[in-house]
Length: 269
Ligand SMILES: NC(=O)c1ccc[n+]([C@@H]2O[C@H](COP(=O)([O-])OP(=O)(O)OC[C@H]3O[C@@H](n4cnc5c(N)ncnc54)[C@H](OP(=O)(O)O)[C@@H]3O)[C@@H](O)[C@H]2O)c1
Image 1: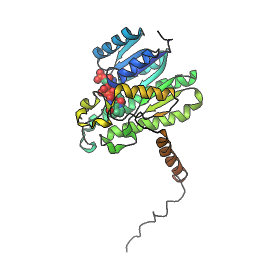
Image 2: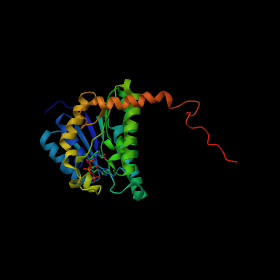
Image 3: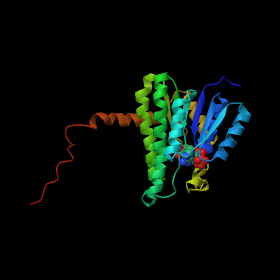
Image 4: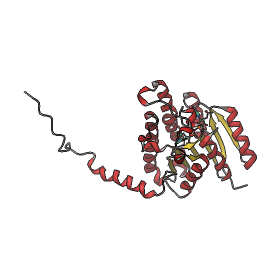
């Protein structure tokens, strides 16, 4: 058995990407707290990991769209000082174009993908900063920078939120010993697609990564010290060039005068 590395709390750990993070982090020496709605599936994942690794694995059934459940997870993050890692993985998609979607379902998606992720990050970040250590992994998506992939637009917006929030925290906590990684997976083979109403069989096989390969790559990116990991991107230089183009615009994004092309439209007599 490896040396115990502290406890990782993983949301959305009953299936897909979260269940693989649970397996890999236990094998690396972490004890686990697994969060999702379905207690029976959590128990199944927890039992298999206990059996394979001998780690302590707690389950915490909770619906992250329910404010009461969310507060319980926040309290656990604040009070359980064994927790050294948070993996904000739980997320849902939607099968319909943005403008045709049910607005209440969109609000639930924002609650899970953005609000819960932000509240859980707040709950742990202050304690990690005070302790001078701790790791947060936020699962976004490539749609955060490629809305052209034509998934639901609110889904893409929640993932852009995750990317922006993580980038801001990385800058603020850089000198406080807290590691924050954001992961941008492309299409990954999980139940997510069927649950979101877009069958995986309808996605070209050449753009779909296995969940095992995706999580192993993301953890390799963490070990390399990356703050942004895009598992499929062959050359990180492409990301750095993208960032450089954005940063080059910064000096011109806030000036006293509008750009010359925005001359006031003449008012006809
Ligand atoms: N699969 C992809 O192609 C892909 C690509 C890019 C990014 N991602 C992101 O990766 C993350 C994981 O996705 P996945 O593919 O592993 O999805 P998945 O297979 O559908 O698993 C989602 C997990 O989240 C849990 N969950 C869903 N709603 C919840 C809620 N209200 N409260 C608590 N837990 C909830 C589910 O368990 P219960 O149903 O039991 O609650 C399950 O454990 C998501 O953030 C997703 O946006 C996925």
